[in-house]
Amino acid sequence: MTEERKKQFEGLCCVELSGEGCASCVSLMPVLHKVVSARDDLRLVHVEVNEENKDLVLGWEVDRVPTVLLTDNGEIFARCHGFQPEEILELWIDAKLEEHNNAKK
Image (cartoon, rainbow, N blue to C red; front, side, top):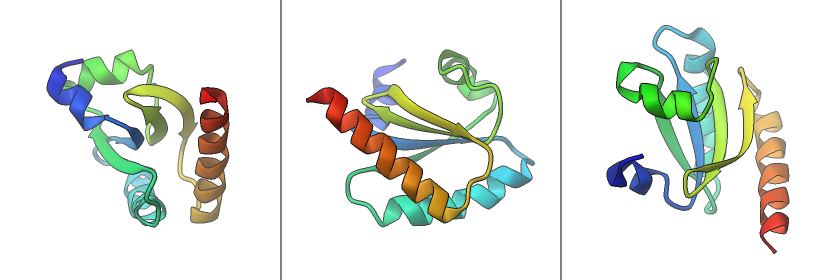
């Protein structure tokens, strides 16, 4: 991962990986944006699954879109696939952040 790319994923991030023409991806993005923008402990980063991002996508073993990753300085600690409603995303993010924070203690 380049230094520029590492900077993009500094701290705690919610990474949304999507593909062009993916209806579930298009539906998920505004829901995820709403959920993450209401928090102050997480940043949303969008990654388009395309040739330009191929190495990152393969390195993260993303095999379908949409995929949502929770990362800490680029290291994945949680992953989910497919469209999820707002309430489920909120619960999932809360639970995974709590697990991650407890593991760091």
